[in-house]
Image (cartoon, rainbow, N blue to C red; front, side, top):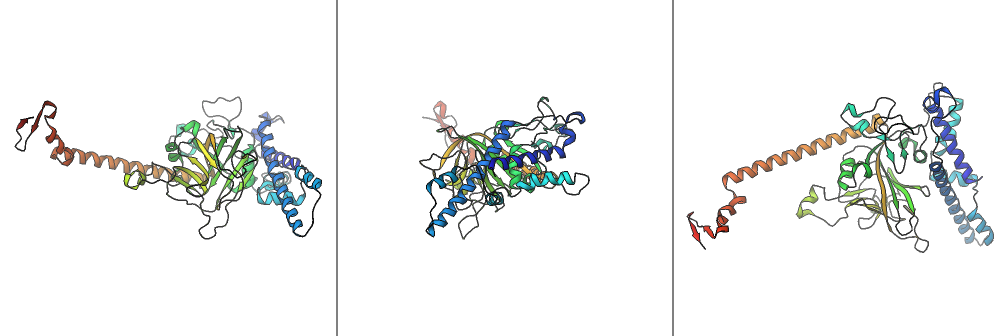
Length: 445
Protein backbone atom coordinates (compact mmCIF):
# COMPACT_ATOMS: atom_id res chain seq x y z
CA UNK A 1 0.00 0.00 0.00
CA UNK A 2 1.09 3.58 -0.56
CA UNK A 3 2.40 5.06 2.69
CA UNK A 4 0.83 8.50 2.27
CA UNK A 5 -2.56 7.02 1.43
CA UNK A 6 -2.60 5.01 4.67
CA UNK A 7 -1.58 8.01 6.80
CA UNK A 8 -4.10 10.24 5.00
CA UNK A 9 -6.87 7.71 5.58
CA UNK A 10 -6.09 7.61 9.31
CA UNK A 11 -6.18 11.41 9.50
CA UNK A 12 -9.50 11.61 7.61
CA UNK A 13 -11.06 8.94 9.84
CA UNK A 14 -9.90 10.79 12.95
CA UNK A 15 -11.24 14.07 11.59
CA UNK A 16 -14.62 12.46 10.78
CA UNK A 17 -14.83 10.99 14.28
CA UNK A 18 -13.94 14.39 15.75
CA UNK A 19 -16.85 15.96 13.84
CA UNK A 20 -19.25 13.27 15.03
CA UNK A 21 -18.33 13.87 18.66
CA UNK A 22 -18.70 17.66 18.33
CA UNK A 23 -21.33 17.73 15.59
CA UNK A 24 -23.53 20.31 17.35
CA UNK A 25 -20.68 22.83 17.26
CA UNK A 26 -19.03 21.70 14.02
CA UNK A 27 -21.97 22.31 11.65
CA UNK A 28 -23.83 25.55 11.09
CA UNK A 29 -27.48 25.64 12.18
CA UNK A 30 -28.21 21.92 11.82
CA UNK A 31 -27.00 21.88 8.20
CA UNK A 32 -24.13 19.89 6.67
CA UNK A 33 -22.03 23.04 6.25
CA UNK A 34 -18.91 23.11 8.40
CA UNK A 35 -18.40 26.10 10.69
CA UNK A 36 -14.66 26.02 9.95
CA UNK A 37 -12.45 24.52 7.27
CA UNK A 38 -9.26 22.65 8.00
CA UNK A 39 -5.95 24.40 7.63
CA UNK A 40 -4.87 22.46 4.54
CA UNK A 41 -1.24 23.54 4.89
CA UNK A 42 -1.01 22.31 8.49
CA UNK A 43 -2.78 19.07 7.62
CA UNK A 44 -0.49 18.48 4.64
CA UNK A 45 2.62 19.07 6.74
CA UNK A 46 1.40 16.68 9.45
CA UNK A 47 0.57 13.94 6.94
CA UNK A 48 3.93 14.44 5.20
CA UNK A 49 5.72 14.20 8.56
CA UNK A 50 4.00 10.95 9.52
CA UNK A 51 4.53 9.55 6.01
CA UNK A 52 8.25 10.34 6.18
CA UNK A 53 8.42 8.53 9.52
CA UNK A 54 6.68 5.46 8.10
CA UNK A 55 8.95 5.31 5.02
CA UNK A 56 12.07 5.80 7.15
CA UNK A 57 11.00 2.92 9.39
CA UNK A 58 10.35 0.71 6.35
CA UNK A 59 13.75 1.53 4.85
CA UNK A 60 15.49 0.77 8.15
CA UNK A 61 13.73 -2.60 8.33
CA UNK A 62 14.71 -3.48 4.77
CA UNK A 63 18.33 -2.53 5.39
CA UNK A 64 18.36 -4.73 8.48
CA UNK A 65 17.01 -7.67 6.47
CA UNK A 66 19.64 -7.11 3.76
CA UNK A 67 22.40 -7.18 6.37
CA UNK A 68 21.03 -10.46 7.70
CA UNK A 69 20.93 -11.87 4.16
CA UNK A 70 24.55 -10.85 3.49
CA UNK A 71 25.63 -12.79 6.56
CA UNK A 72 24.41 -15.92 4.80
CA UNK A 73 25.93 -15.01 1.45
CA UNK A 74 22.78 -13.65 -0.19
CA UNK A 75 23.04 -10.41 -2.16
CA UNK A 76 20.33 -8.36 -3.84
CA UNK A 77 20.84 -6.56 -7.13
CA UNK A 78 21.92 -2.88 -6.73
CA UNK A 79 18.97 -1.72 -8.83
CA UNK A 80 16.56 -3.58 -6.58
CA UNK A 81 18.08 -2.00 -3.44
CA UNK A 82 17.86 1.49 -4.95
CA UNK A 83 14.24 0.92 -5.98
CA UNK A 84 13.33 -0.24 -2.49
CA UNK A 85 15.01 2.79 -0.91
CA UNK A 86 12.96 5.23 -3.00
CA UNK A 87 9.69 3.31 -3.02
CA UNK A 88 6.61 5.15 -1.66
CA UNK A 89 5.01 1.81 -0.79
CA UNK A 90 5.14 -0.24 2.40
CA UNK A 91 4.06 -3.75 3.23
CA UNK A 92 1.46 -4.64 5.83
CA UNK A 93 4.18 -5.98 8.13
CA UNK A 94 6.18 -2.73 7.80
CA UNK A 95 3.09 -0.66 8.57
CA UNK A 96 2.24 -2.72 11.67
CA UNK A 97 5.82 -2.58 12.95
CA UNK A 98 5.99 1.21 12.52
CA UNK A 99 2.64 1.68 14.21
CA UNK A 100 3.67 -0.57 17.11
CA UNK A 101 6.96 1.22 17.74
CA UNK A 102 6.09 4.83 16.95
CA UNK A 103 2.33 5.44 17.16
CA UNK A 104 0.75 2.66 19.24
CA UNK A 105 -2.64 4.42 19.42
CA UNK A 106 -2.84 5.54 15.78
CA UNK A 107 -5.59 3.14 14.69
CA UNK A 108 -7.42 3.48 18.00
CA UNK A 109 -7.55 7.27 17.49
CA UNK A 110 -8.63 7.07 13.86
CA UNK A 111 -10.11 4.12 11.98
CA UNK A 112 -11.14 2.05 15.00
CA UNK A 113 -12.71 5.02 16.78
CA UNK A 114 -14.56 6.14 13.64
CA UNK A 115 -16.02 2.68 12.91
CA UNK A 116 -17.04 2.26 16.55
CA UNK A 117 -18.89 5.60 16.53
CA UNK A 118 -20.71 4.67 13.31
CA UNK A 119 -21.84 1.32 14.67
CA UNK A 120 -22.28 2.42 18.29
CA UNK A 121 -22.81 6.20 18.32
CA UNK A 122 -22.47 8.25 21.52
CA UNK A 123 -25.50 7.69 23.76
CA UNK A 124 -25.95 4.11 22.59
CA UNK A 125 -22.62 2.76 23.85
CA UNK A 126 -20.78 3.38 27.11
CA UNK A 127 -17.46 3.42 25.24
CA UNK A 128 -15.85 6.84 25.40
CA UNK A 129 -14.76 8.15 21.99
CA UNK A 130 -11.20 9.38 21.54
CA UNK A 131 -11.17 13.17 21.72
CA UNK A 132 -8.74 15.68 20.32
CA UNK A 133 -8.94 18.57 22.76
CA UNK A 134 -8.51 22.26 22.08
CA UNK A 135 -5.58 23.78 23.92
CA UNK A 136 -6.49 26.41 26.49
CA UNK A 137 -4.98 29.05 28.74
CA UNK A 138 -3.93 28.01 32.23
CA UNK A 139 -5.78 31.11 33.50
CA UNK A 140 -9.01 29.18 32.91
CA UNK A 141 -8.21 26.80 35.77
CA UNK A 142 -5.25 28.29 37.67
CA UNK A 143 -6.51 31.84 38.17
CA UNK A 144 -8.16 32.67 41.46
CA UNK A 145 -10.23 35.39 39.82
CA UNK A 146 -13.57 34.18 38.54
CA UNK A 147 -13.78 37.21 36.25
CA UNK A 148 -10.79 35.94 34.24
CA UNK A 149 -12.45 32.64 33.45
CA UNK A 150 -14.62 32.22 30.35
CA UNK A 151 -18.20 31.12 30.44
CA UNK A 152 -19.03 27.46 29.69
CA UNK A 153 -18.48 26.72 26.01
CA UNK A 154 -15.93 29.51 25.56
CA UNK A 155 -12.14 29.77 25.68
CA UNK A 156 -9.62 32.50 26.34
CA UNK A 157 -8.10 33.18 22.90
CA UNK A 158 -4.58 31.89 22.30
CA UNK A 159 -2.35 31.63 19.26
CA UNK A 160 0.50 29.15 19.20
CA UNK A 161 3.38 29.15 16.69
CA UNK A 162 3.31 25.34 16.75
CA UNK A 163 -0.40 24.60 17.21
CA UNK A 164 -2.18 27.53 15.54
CA UNK A 165 -5.14 29.19 17.24
CA UNK A 166 -7.56 27.74 19.75
CA UNK A 167 -10.58 29.87 18.75
CA UNK A 168 -12.75 30.12 15.67
CA UNK A 169 -11.77 32.34 12.82
CA UNK A 170 -13.77 35.54 12.64
CA UNK A 171 -14.40 35.77 16.38
CA UNK A 172 -13.00 38.63 18.38
CA UNK A 173 -9.61 38.07 19.97
CA UNK A 174 -9.82 40.41 22.97
CA UNK A 175 -12.10 38.36 25.22
CA UNK A 176 -13.59 34.88 25.62
CA UNK A 177 -14.25 33.24 22.24
CA UNK A 178 -15.85 30.12 20.89
CA UNK A 179 -13.35 27.24 20.70
CA UNK A 180 -12.19 26.06 17.30
CA UNK A 181 -13.91 23.01 15.84
CA UNK A 182 -10.88 22.01 13.75
CA UNK A 183 -8.94 18.92 14.82
CA UNK A 184 -5.39 20.04 15.51
CA UNK A 185 -2.90 17.92 13.49
CA UNK A 186 -0.22 18.13 16.19
CA UNK A 187 -2.67 17.01 18.88
CA UNK A 188 -3.73 14.12 16.62
CA UNK A 189 -0.10 13.04 16.14
CA UNK A 190 0.67 13.09 19.87
CA UNK A 191 -2.64 11.44 20.78
CA UNK A 192 -1.61 8.67 18.39
CA UNK A 193 1.53 8.24 20.49
CA UNK A 194 -0.57 7.96 23.67
CA UNK A 195 -4.26 8.81 23.80
CA UNK A 196 -4.28 8.45 27.60
CA UNK A 197 -1.62 11.15 27.97
CA UNK A 198 -2.75 13.58 25.27
CA UNK A 199 -6.46 12.91 24.87
CA UNK A 200 -7.41 15.00 27.91
CA UNK A 201 -6.82 18.66 28.67
CA UNK A 202 -4.09 20.87 27.19
CA UNK A 203 -3.44 24.03 29.20
CA UNK A 204 -0.61 26.36 28.24
CA UNK A 205 1.40 27.38 31.30
CA UNK A 206 4.29 29.13 29.52
CA UNK A 207 4.90 30.88 26.22
CA UNK A 208 8.05 32.85 25.46
CA UNK A 209 6.09 35.30 23.35
CA UNK A 210 3.38 35.87 25.97
CA UNK A 211 5.26 35.49 29.28
CA UNK A 212 8.66 36.88 28.32
CA UNK A 213 11.90 35.35 27.12
CA UNK A 214 13.47 34.87 30.55
CA UNK A 215 14.41 31.69 32.35
CA UNK A 216 12.97 33.14 35.55
CA UNK A 217 9.52 33.32 33.94
CA UNK A 218 9.87 29.75 32.66
CA UNK A 219 10.90 28.51 36.11
CA UNK A 220 8.05 30.28 37.85
CA UNK A 221 5.60 28.64 35.43
CA UNK A 222 6.80 25.05 35.66
CA UNK A 223 8.56 24.59 39.02
CA UNK A 224 6.10 23.28 41.57
CA UNK A 225 3.42 22.29 39.06
CA UNK A 226 2.43 18.81 40.15
CA UNK A 227 1.49 17.14 36.86
CA UNK A 228 2.84 16.01 33.47
CA UNK A 229 4.07 18.67 31.05
CA UNK A 230 4.74 18.86 27.34
CA UNK A 231 7.56 21.07 26.06
CA UNK A 232 7.17 22.28 22.44
CA UNK A 233 10.09 24.03 20.75
CA UNK A 234 10.29 25.44 17.27
CA UNK A 235 13.88 26.18 16.26
CA UNK A 236 15.89 26.87 13.12
CA UNK A 237 19.44 26.19 11.99
CA UNK A 238 21.04 29.52 11.10
CA UNK A 239 23.46 27.86 8.66
CA UNK A 240 20.92 25.93 6.59
CA UNK A 241 17.72 27.79 7.47
CA UNK A 242 15.96 24.47 8.15
CA UNK A 243 13.34 24.56 10.91
CA UNK A 244 11.91 21.82 13.10
CA UNK A 245 9.29 21.36 15.81
CA UNK A 246 10.25 19.05 18.66
CA UNK A 247 10.31 18.74 22.44
CA UNK A 248 9.82 16.43 25.40
CA UNK A 249 7.10 14.93 27.57
CA UNK A 250 7.74 14.62 31.31
CA UNK A 251 5.57 12.90 33.91
CA UNK A 252 7.68 14.07 36.87
CA UNK A 253 7.16 17.55 38.27
CA UNK A 254 9.91 20.06 37.61
CA UNK A 255 12.38 20.84 40.40
CA UNK A 256 15.69 22.68 40.64
CA UNK A 257 18.43 20.09 40.94
CA UNK A 258 22.19 19.72 40.48
CA UNK A 259 21.79 16.43 38.65
CA UNK A 260 19.38 14.52 36.44
CA UNK A 261 16.20 13.05 37.90
CA UNK A 262 12.80 11.80 36.75
CA UNK A 263 11.16 8.50 35.81
CA UNK A 264 11.03 6.36 32.64
CA UNK A 265 7.51 7.68 31.96
CA UNK A 266 8.80 10.33 29.56
CA UNK A 267 10.11 10.66 26.01
CA UNK A 268 11.59 13.00 23.42
CA UNK A 269 9.77 13.62 20.15
CA UNK A 270 9.81 15.53 16.88
CA UNK A 271 6.67 16.63 15.04
CA UNK A 272 8.27 18.14 11.91
CA UNK A 273 9.81 17.77 9.40
CA UNK A 274 9.71 14.03 10.22
CA UNK A 275 7.70 12.52 13.05
CA UNK A 276 9.95 10.78 15.54
CA UNK A 277 9.52 9.40 19.08
CA UNK A 278 12.58 8.60 21.23
CA UNK A 279 11.49 6.58 24.24
CA UNK A 280 13.63 5.83 27.30
CA UNK A 281 16.09 2.95 27.11
CA UNK A 282 16.36 0.35 29.88
CA UNK A 283 18.70 1.48 32.62
CA UNK A 284 21.85 -0.68 32.84
CA UNK A 285 23.89 -0.06 35.98
CA UNK A 286 24.96 3.57 36.01
CA UNK A 287 24.13 4.03 32.32
CA UNK A 288 20.89 5.80 31.52
CA UNK A 289 18.34 7.32 33.84
CA UNK A 290 19.21 10.90 32.86
CA UNK A 291 15.62 11.84 32.11
CA UNK A 292 15.38 15.55 32.93
CA UNK A 293 17.42 18.40 34.41
CA UNK A 294 16.83 21.99 35.54
CA UNK A 295 19.43 24.24 37.14
CA UNK A 296 19.88 28.01 37.29
CA UNK A 297 21.10 30.90 39.43
CA UNK A 298 17.62 31.34 40.88
CA UNK A 299 18.15 28.19 42.91
CA UNK A 300 18.36 29.49 46.50
CA UNK A 301 21.28 27.19 47.33
CA UNK A 302 23.29 28.29 44.29
CA UNK A 303 22.81 31.95 45.24
CA UNK A 304 25.18 31.33 48.13
CA UNK A 305 28.63 32.32 46.73
CA UNK A 306 30.23 29.54 48.74
CA UNK A 307 28.09 26.97 46.95
CA UNK A 308 28.24 28.24 43.37
CA UNK A 309 29.09 25.62 40.80
CA UNK A 310 30.04 25.29 37.16
CA UNK A 311 27.03 23.18 36.20
CA UNK A 312 25.20 24.19 33.02
CA UNK A 313 22.35 26.65 33.57
CA UNK A 314 19.28 25.63 31.67
CA UNK A 315 16.86 22.81 31.00
CA UNK A 316 18.00 19.45 29.60
CA UNK A 317 17.16 15.86 28.76
CA UNK A 318 19.39 12.83 28.39
CA UNK A 319 23.12 12.66 27.81
CA UNK A 320 25.44 13.98 30.51
CA UNK A 321 25.79 17.26 32.37
CA UNK A 322 28.62 18.29 30.06
CA UNK A 323 26.79 17.13 26.92
CA UNK A 324 22.99 16.72 27.28
CA UNK A 325 21.04 15.07 24.48
CA UNK A 326 18.66 18.06 24.35
CA UNK A 327 19.50 21.30 26.15
CA UNK A 328 17.81 24.73 26.32
CA UNK A 329 20.20 27.41 27.55
CA UNK A 330 19.24 29.77 30.39
CA UNK A 331 18.95 32.66 27.94
CA UNK A 332 16.19 30.82 26.03
CA UNK A 333 18.06 31.71 22.86
CA UNK A 334 19.48 28.41 21.62
CA UNK A 335 18.74 24.71 21.93
CA UNK A 336 21.40 22.06 21.37
CA UNK A 337 20.51 18.60 20.15
CA UNK A 338 22.35 15.40 19.27
CA UNK A 339 21.25 12.09 17.81
CA UNK A 340 21.97 9.60 20.60
CA UNK A 341 22.72 9.03 24.28
CA UNK A 342 22.35 6.23 26.83
CA UNK A 343 18.93 7.37 28.15
CA UNK A 344 16.76 7.78 25.04
CA UNK A 345 16.44 5.87 21.78
CA UNK A 346 18.50 6.77 18.74
CA UNK A 347 17.14 9.52 16.51
CA UNK A 348 17.86 13.05 15.32
CA UNK A 349 16.01 15.94 16.91
CA UNK A 350 15.76 19.49 15.55
CA UNK A 351 16.75 20.35 11.97
CA UNK A 352 18.48 17.55 10.00
CA UNK A 353 22.29 17.56 10.29
CA UNK A 354 24.43 18.13 7.18
CA UNK A 355 25.09 14.97 5.09
CA UNK A 356 28.86 15.27 5.61
CA UNK A 357 28.49 15.27 9.44
CA UNK A 358 25.35 13.29 10.35
CA UNK A 359 26.42 12.74 13.98
CA UNK A 360 27.16 16.37 14.80
CA UNK A 361 25.81 18.17 17.86
CA UNK A 362 24.38 21.47 16.70
CA UNK A 363 22.91 24.60 18.26
CA UNK A 364 19.65 25.93 16.86
CA UNK A 365 18.05 29.33 17.30
CA UNK A 366 14.80 29.10 19.27
CA UNK A 367 11.85 30.70 17.48
CA UNK A 368 9.14 29.65 19.92
CA UNK A 369 9.03 27.78 23.22
CA UNK A 370 5.87 26.66 24.99
CA UNK A 371 5.00 24.38 27.89
CA UNK A 372 1.60 22.72 28.28
CA UNK A 373 0.04 20.95 31.23
CA UNK A 374 -1.55 17.79 29.82
CA UNK A 375 -3.86 15.15 31.25
CA UNK A 376 -7.32 14.91 32.71
CA UNK A 377 -8.43 18.36 33.80
CA UNK A 378 -10.24 17.34 36.98
CA UNK A 379 -7.88 14.69 38.36
CA UNK A 380 -4.47 15.83 37.06
CA UNK A 381 -4.31 19.44 35.88
CA UNK A 382 -6.38 21.24 38.54
CA UNK A 383 -4.59 19.45 41.43
CA UNK A 384 -1.29 20.22 39.71
CA UNK A 385 -2.02 23.94 39.65
CA UNK A 386 -3.21 23.81 43.27
CA UNK A 387 0.12 22.25 44.25
CA UNK A 388 1.99 24.97 42.37
CA UNK A 389 -0.09 27.64 44.11
CA UNK A 390 0.65 26.22 47.56
CA UNK A 391 4.35 26.05 46.75
CA UNK A 392 4.33 29.67 45.63
CA UNK A 393 2.54 30.72 48.82
CA UNK A 394 5.19 28.99 50.95
CA UNK A 395 8.02 30.57 48.94
CA UNK A 396 6.46 34.04 49.17
CA UNK A 397 5.89 33.68 52.93
CA UNK A 398 9.49 32.56 53.43
CA UNK A 399 10.76 35.54 51.48
CA UNK A 400 8.58 37.99 53.44
CA UNK A 401 9.75 36.49 56.71
CA UNK A 402 13.41 36.73 55.66
CA UNK A 403 12.94 40.38 54.71
CA UNK A 404 11.26 41.15 58.06
CA UNK A 405 14.05 39.47 60.04
CA UNK A 406 16.76 41.23 58.02
CA UNK A 407 15.10 44.62 58.50
CA UNK A 408 14.72 44.10 62.26
CA UNK A 409 18.36 43.03 62.59
CA UNK A 410 19.48 45.99 60.51
CA UNK A 411 17.61 48.54 62.66
CA UNK A 412 18.73 46.93 65.90
CA UNK A 413 22.35 47.00 64.83
CA UNK A 414 21.99 50.65 63.81
CA UNK A 415 20.57 51.65 67.24
CA UNK A 416 23.14 49.70 69.23
CA UNK A 417 26.13 50.67 67.12
CA UNK A 418 26.96 47.13 66.18
CA UNK A 419 29.85 46.05 64.05
CA UNK A 420 28.00 46.79 60.82
CA UNK A 421 28.09 50.50 61.75
CA UNK A 422 31.40 50.70 63.67
CA UNK A 423 33.02 52.42 60.70
CA UNK A 424 30.80 55.47 61.20
CA UNK A 425 32.68 56.56 64.29
CA UNK A 426 36.02 55.84 62.66
CA UNK A 427 35.47 57.91 59.54
CA UNK A 428 33.37 60.70 61.08
CA UNK A 429 34.85 64.02 60.00
CA UNK A 430 37.35 62.49 57.56
CA UNK A 431 35.93 64.51 54.67
CA UNK A 432 36.91 67.75 56.55
CA UNK A 433 40.37 66.62 57.55
CA UNK A 434 39.52 65.52 61.08
CA UNK A 435 39.30 62.15 62.80
CA UNK A 436 37.78 61.33 66.16
CA UNK A 437 40.08 59.84 68.71
CA UNK A 438 39.23 57.24 71.33
CA UNK A 439 38.26 60.02 73.71
CA UNK A 440 35.73 61.32 71.15
CA UNK A 441 37.69 64.55 70.54
CA UNK A 442 38.55 65.59 67.01
CA UNK A 443 42.17 65.77 65.93
CA UNK A 444 43.37 67.60 62.86
CA UNK A 445 45.38 65.75 60.21
